Length: 385
Length: 142
Image 1 (tube, chains in turn blue, cyan):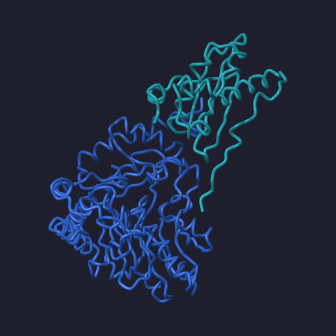
Image 2 (tube, chains in turn green, cyan):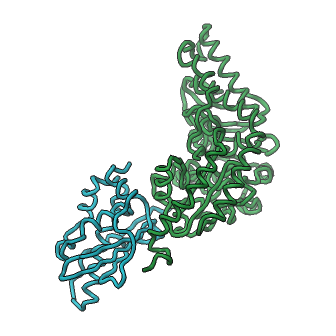
Image 3 (cartoon, rainbow over the protein chains, first blue to last red):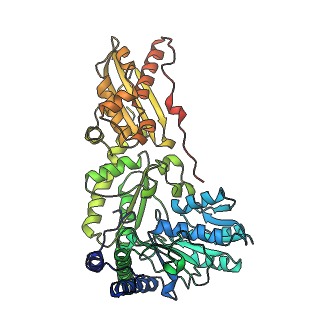
C-alpha cells in the first residue's frame, strides 16, 4: 500500500534487464559490436518511453539517474540558460521537495520565485498562474498529479498560459505518468520529469522529456552523451528496464485504472464511514486511481504507520522524502489543513499487485488501530476519566 | 530505527489511561509539533503509588511515556524528580537522534505532574527545570 515510494520491479522488467547486467556489457558510445548492441537497446528504450507520453521524437527523451535529477536539471537548466530573458520562476506550494528545494536554492542565486497557492482539494487555479506570470518569467513548474493527495492539475490550461507568455512549462510527471494518460503534445508540455521506479521499473533511472527547441543548460558535463544534455556512460540495464516498464504501463494502464479505482472508491467509502474522526484529504473523485489519503482526529501518523507495519501493511504518512524532517506534510498545509490535524495522516498508494485481499485486510485493520491510538490520546475528549 | 525495547513499549504500552482524582497532572508538548503527553500521579506518603499516561505522538513519544511510568512507579517524589530525559532514553536502549529532542518529553511531563502535586498541596518550590519543550525550533519551509 506504498507504491508511491517504491513499486516492485515487474519480473518482465528484470528479465529484459538481465542480459545487460551480465553477458552484454557494452558501452553505447563504443564503435564495436558490443557497443552497437548496447546503443540499440538504449534507443529502443528511448522509443518505449517516448511512446508512453506521446513525444513527437524519441530524441526528446534524456535519460537521467532518476526523477530528482530530472527535476533539478529542468529547473536549474532552464533558469540558467534563459537568465538573459528573465529571472523569475513560478511553482506551487504543494510540489515535491526536489522542486521546492531547487527553487529555494535559485532564490539565493539572484532568481525570484512565486509559489502559487492551491485550493482545499489540492488543485491549482490556472487564473492564479496567469496573475503571477510576467515577461521575466522563464519557467513554470507544476506536478501533473500530486503524489500525496492525487489531485490532477489543469496542465493543458497552464501550458497555454506558459506559451502565451513565452515561458517554458516543466511538469513533474512522477506520480502521474503510467497511472493516468499523459500526452506532452496535447498538454503543451515543454519539459517533463519521469521516474522508472514509480512504474514498476528499476531504481536509479529516470528521464527528462525536453521538447525539441527548448533552451536548457546541462547539469552534468562530460563526454556529451544524451545529446550533450547529460554526460556520463548510460546506465544500460536500468534504461532497458525503464523502457520495458514504460511499454507495459502504456499497455496495461486503462485496465489498471479501472481496477484500482474500484479499490480506491471502496476504501474512501469504508474508511470514511467506518472509522471515527476520519477525514479524506483531497477530492473524493478527482484524484489518481491509486491514491487514498486520510487524516484522523487526535492521533499521529507515525504511530499509525508503525502499528500497520506490525500487521504487515506498508503505508506512509506523506512523501517518504519528508519523513526525515518530522514536519507535517507541506502539501496538506498548502491545502489549508491546520498543522495539528496534518499530523495524523495515512497515505495508501496502490499498484499492479494490489489485490482484493489486500484491500479487505487494510479495511479490517485500520479502524481498530485508529481506535486504539485514539484511546491513548490526551486530545480525545472521550478518554477523560 | 527503534530498538526492540522501544518497540516493545510502543506495542504494549504500560499504564495507559487516567486516574480518578489524581494528586498531580502534567501536560507537555504541543499537537502542532506532533507530540503531546499527559502524566497523572497518585501520591501517598511522598511515594508515587499510581501513575498513568496519555500520549498523542509518534512511536518514540508513546514508548518514552510508557517507560517513565515504569521508572517512576513506587519511587519517592524526590527520586522521581531525579529521572532525566537521558535516563528514559537509556532505559529504552537508545532513541534515534532526531527523536531525542521533540519526542523525549516524558521526563518533563512527570516533573510537571509533580509540580502540580506540590502546587495543589500549597508547597512553594523553585522551578524544577527549564521547559525544553518551549525551545522547539522548526525550520520553516519556503
